[in-house]
Every structure is written in structure tokens, then in C-alpha cells.
Image (cartoon, rainbow, N blue to C red):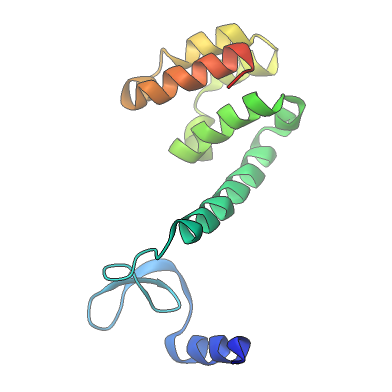
Length: 139
């Protein structure tokens, strides 16, 4: 089977829409006719493929917003990426005091500041885990 030809054929017939939309019979759809109401995701591998794509997109956006991100160790980079994944890069950028502390190497203070936010109350254990990672540089 020539899957590339079939893909091209299906794209020509179905179209490719990168945002969620309702198809002609009112079913939520995305991509090339992916029926989200009846198909969703077929496997963990498919979910992880999408997750990796999301992570790479958020990382690129965060690196543009915080040029010093790559100066941090991996654990602290993951803290900020996790937060950006949860609330969007624009949401993370509202943590001006926390980010300022991180940028200046005041990581324990930044960890404490993270817990003073409305976000910390919303995500509870996630915030405590990330705060500890920020403070210690360890998982």
C-alpha cells in the first residue's frame, strides 16, 4: 500500500483542519477527519506523540520568552516547562516575581513564591512537587 498516496487522497477529500471543528453532521473533528467523539486517541503511543509535539512547541515558545531558560539545569527547565504546559507560556509569564528570582539564581525564594499563587491553590500537589524541584534541583 502506498500510504502517502492514500494520505494525499484523504486530505484532498476530507481537507485538513488543525483546529477542532464540527463536521457537516455536527461531530467534533480535527485534522483529517479525526472524529473526536467516537475515535479520540487510539493508543498511549498516539497520546505521547501528541504530547511530545506539544512539549516541543511550548519549549520553543518559552525559549523565545525566556532566553535564559537554557542556562538553567534540566530539572529547573522542566519545572518551567511543566508550568507553561499547564497554564500556557502567557500564564507563566505573569509570574514576574518568581521568574525574576529564578533569573537571579534565588531558587529557594522562587520556590516559595510559586506556592503563594492562585495557581498553587488550583493544582495543589503539582505546585508543591514543582516548588520542591525548583528549590533542590532534584526530582
